[in-house]
Length: 59
Image (cartoon, one colour):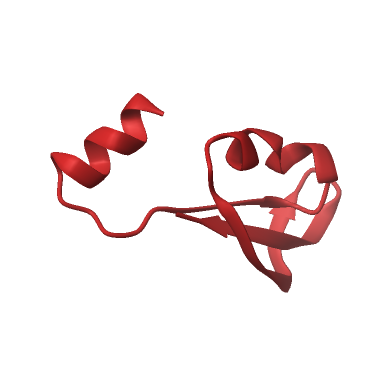
């Protein structure tokens, strides 16, 4: 959470975004950091199994 506070308060950002593939456990750290899920982009990412969907979170 310290990094988020720095980015908002010191660096002046008004938005931080991040994504992961559709594995539900992949977004737990983002949820714990206070980020909210915004949507799913279909067939946008690539992982070790090939093309995958991406789940986007932002704060």
